[in-house]
Image (cartoon, rainbow, N blue to C red; front, side, top):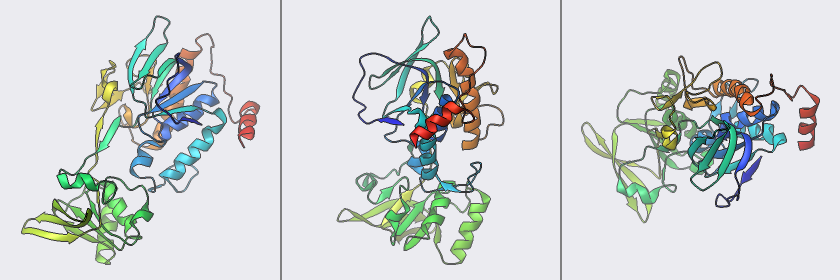
Length: 352
C-alpha cells in the first residue's frame, strides 16, 4: 500500500482510476484487495490521519473473534493482516482527505473532489466510511479540555499506557465494559462509573463485570461525573454526583466512553436515499439510489442489516463486481485474477 504522507501535495491533473474507495477501515482495505483480484484499479481516501478506521481509533487492542479462520486477533492485528493482503496491488491511500463533492459527467464517469483539493476521475465510488465522520461524545466540563490525551481519554490507544495506574472508566455500553474488564488486568485499580445500574452492553459482558466486582478485581459505582479535581495540571480525583449527594473518587486517568456522534458530512448532500444516517442499498449489489455509488459496511442500510466486519467483506465483494461493469462496460463478465490464478500468485510472490 502507498500512503500519501503529505495531504497538502495536490496533483496538477485528476487522478484516474476505476474505483474510489472512501474509508480505510477493515472493509475498505478488503475492498481494495478484492478490486485487485478482479482486475480493477482503485485508490483509497480517508478523513482520519492513519489507516484502520474506527477499529484503530477506538479499540485497537480489543479482541475480534468472528473473522473466518482466525480464532482471535486484535483490531490492530486485523488491520495489519489486511494491509499485507493488499500489498501486491500497491493501492495508494490518501489520508486526512474528506470527500466533499461528486459529479457525474456525460460519459458516465464521476469527478470526485476532496476538501484539500484532490480530484479523482473514476468509474464508480465505494463508500466504506463506517458511520461517516465521527467524533466521541465528550465530557461537558471545561476542565476536561486541557487534560485530553494526558489524563482524560476518549479511546484506549494502548493498554500499556495505563499500567499500574488508578483508572476510572465512564459509560454503560459495550466499549466501556470491555475496556474496564481489559484494564483490570494491567491497571492498579479500575472503577467503572455509570449513571444507572442498567447497561446497554451485551449480557455476557455485564455478567462478567459483576463477577469481577464480586471478586474484588474492579469496582462499580452508580453516579454522574460532576467535576474533575486538578492539581499542578494533573488529574487527582473526580467529583461524582449520586442520589444521596456528592462523593470524591481518586483517579489518575479518566476514560470516558459515552459513544460516538456520527455525521455523514458532505455525503448527506449527494442525493442518496438515506435512513437513520445510513445509505439505502440494493442487496443484490449494494448499489445506492444513484447508480455507480455503492455503500458497504456500517454505512449501508438494508433489511436485517448486521453491523459485522464479516458482512462488510461480503458486501464489498458483490459491490465491486457491479462496479466492474461501469469500469469495463464492453466486457460481458468479470475477469478474475484470483489467488487461484498464476498472475496474482506472481504478484504475491514478488511482494514477499
